[in-house]
Length: 210
Ligand code: HEC
Ligand code: HEC
Ligand code: HEC
Image 1 (cartoon, rainbow, N blue to C red):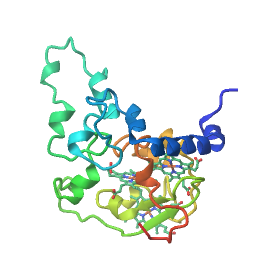
Image 2: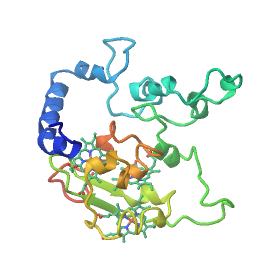
Image 3: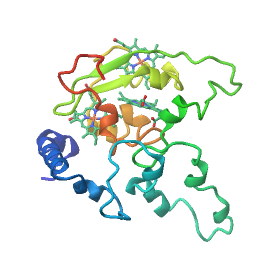
Image 4: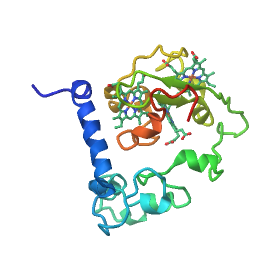
């Protein structure tokens, strides 16, 4: 039987994680497979630290160059703005996509609350720690980062009841575009390459500790 994704997570994930940890210990070079074609095989590999310079070389990011969104036969194809140009004033994350949170916090972008720009955002400073994460570090959901530019109604009452612990979330749901995956992988950072950004609270750490 072909294992389904949830089943894979239940049965194989500990092994996958153990293998990944072992590889990380062996040598940082071991993570070189994450890059498309390293320009210099001996250069240190960018893993987590966001960096505008190194990020745009990441394989995930470069897939944008090989997409089929554009019709090359269209005489105006060359006039369409490309992602490199459109995002050149914005810092990139480690996978080479815009780091919107950093852009916001550094004041490089100032999103409007509505079309007129006059309404106030309702910012809520409340972290929810989610602990059904098996062997992974716990998930910190930061309300503040979200409510700087999203309304409560984007998430409440659906897909999340405003009661901590009431939603049962599996990674398979997220990968299919539900719960956090409604936005992550779409308008927000890519789930597959960014486990640590959500799973940021080591198990056993005091709640609220970073
Ligand atoms: C956008 C945020 C986000 C990202 C990115 C993310 N996760 Fe999760 N993950 C969650 C949430 C939320 C839960 C559910 C936690 C709960 O209900 O207590 C979860 C649960 C899990 C679980 C336990 C439930 C299950 O499905 O087995 C595992 C294992 C897991 N994540 C692994 C991963 C791995 C591996 C990655 C990277 C490939 C990853 N996660 C990336 C948010 C995220
Ligand atoms: C991006 C999605 C998102 C937005 C926007 C959002 N929330 Fe939440 N909220 C969540 C999630 C996820 C939970 C946890 C649900 C769970 O654990 O099942 C939560 C939980 C809550 C809780 C329960 C806290 C507790 O301790 O039980 C309250 C209250 C809440 N939110 C209020 C708000 C308010 C008020 C706003 C707007 C200012 C808001 N939320 C905006 C996602 C969001
Ligand atoms: C309604 C859309 C939406 C939903 C649903 C949503 N997010 Fe986000 N999230 C965003 C946006 C937009 C950002 C900022 C853009 C980015 O960082 O790529 C963000 C950023 C984040 C960040 C980075 C915060 C920071 O300060 O660096 C984390 C962590 C995160 N989300 C976790 C989650 C988790 C966990 C869930 C599900 C429980 C979730 N999000 C659900 C839209 C959403």
